[in-house]
Image (tube, rainbow, N blue to C red; front, side, top):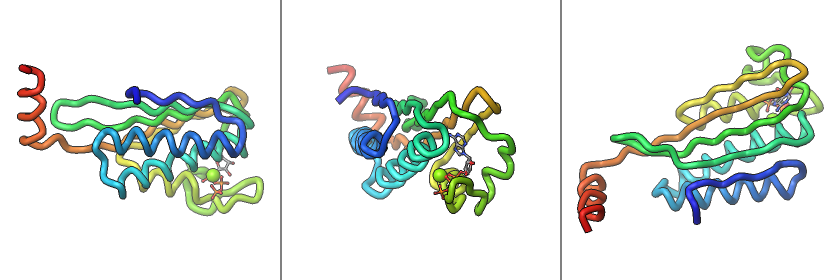
Length: 148
Ligand SMILES: Nc1ncnc2c1ncn2[C@@H]1O[C@H](COP(=O)(O)OP(=O)(O)OP(=O)(O)O)[C@@H](O)[C@H]1O
Ligand SMILES: [Mg+2]
């Protein structure tokens, strides 16, 4: 499996695929089952928002490298109607189209970093990350591995 998953999201089956792809990548990167599940849940929330509120868009999940940590970054992008009041949308209970308004605030809690950009008429981009600490033993093993 490569270090990147890219999925066009338009229907429920795509949400399932984005969720599964994100989970697989997270497991491959060494995230615990619990963390992989949280990442998968966050991905399905933003994917569902794309389908319900924007109609279509895309999700990219890829590895992000740091010195002492590494992780996954999830980018969910669409060119839908955008969100007029972002602050309100990030509050619990602000739901349109019959939603409970829990998806975005819940997703922000689940992930380590969360950023949302939106402009009315041009779309919405959510960028979020979850990190994993690279411990000393892991760093040593990687070094040995590189030396062959
Ligand atoms: N990609 C998007 N494009 C346009 N509007 C969006 C998008 N994502 C979220 N929103 C707006 O932000 C609101 C809050 O989103 P959130 O996911 O928290 O709640 P919800 O989707 O309405 O309900 P729930 O996720 O609990 O089923 C939505 O009701 C919608 O108005
Ligand atoms: Mg939602």
